[in-house]
Image (cartoon, rainbow, N blue to C red; front, side, top):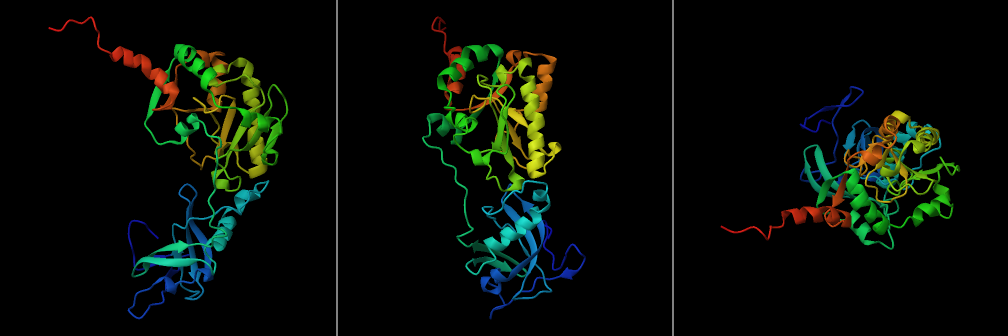
Length: 357
């Protein structure tokens, strides 16, 4: 159904014109009682938007008519029971998975519709879904530090152009003093935690890494696929430390990470956005592998550096990242931002030796 106009008749994909039938009440106004959600039969997905957690479905209400079609729009789906298969079938079964999720989430006798308004063949309703499947993914960070609080708070952000000298005199001392605990990294690398979430592992101490779902991904919804490669080698704080000696490590992560995702999820290299953050939240080397369809935070040019570009820059100039000016985004209350702002404040202070005239 076109979003820009309402039409008395709509042509469905296979060319048959249908009007949505409605059961009218005594005053000729359809209500939520007209629709039996348990009896809605999905026929085809018109649109599945994982970013906005919505889906548009074509189907029919058995209680009304099997010949007349209905479109249900903007239904928030649960993904708690969908699983990614360990091969390319996960992609092919995506539509089937959404249909199944729809049937579990609102096609239930315990689901209810509450009418907002109905105008001719168009109606808006609120659906109270079955509590069993109406679930919300929750992430808990405990104990949370001040830096965690800053990261998840809404506040002003500033773009900082960090020179090589800035890094040595401001950023590096700050990292050495203020960086977040890396215990969760080491728990994974040393197999103390999250072993069942590991997708791939290369045990080499020089070029090895562990690939597993990012904290933001539920590990099930394929359209939001997002994995992290955690480097086994320690002592690399950020992009600034990478040089020619790390090329075998970076190329191994790129090649074997892509292979593992292709094998497990059926997603090709040209459907992945592979990058390194600067400034990173955690100062231990890790590489991001989100699906190109997914737009997680931190994908923008002021923070993300494509792994292919990083490798290319180092091949051209081995100590490229020691010399180049790098941009980074800092929150207003971030202690590193305060340290960058301090010299600017001094420059703006009035000169006490100036004589007033």
